[in-house]
Length: 93
Image: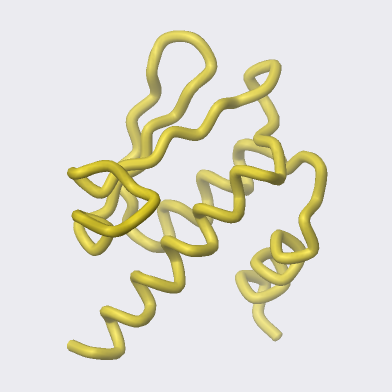
């Protein structure tokens, strides 16, 4: 099992918090565009998510960051959904 698989499996077990750097590492691996907004929010988007339920019209999703270092586990559900959509569209290419 790869390191990526271990991290995604951990996320599926609904942790309370995950380090921001771990999340950013996974997002970069799947080629998400990442924008840091003033305050404690990260906007992520991906072309495969455009017009998908649960994501904005441009395929975006906002991740609140707690204390500038951690992301609550409840927000990982959308990232896992996004990753499955991206993997599915890669398989169909």
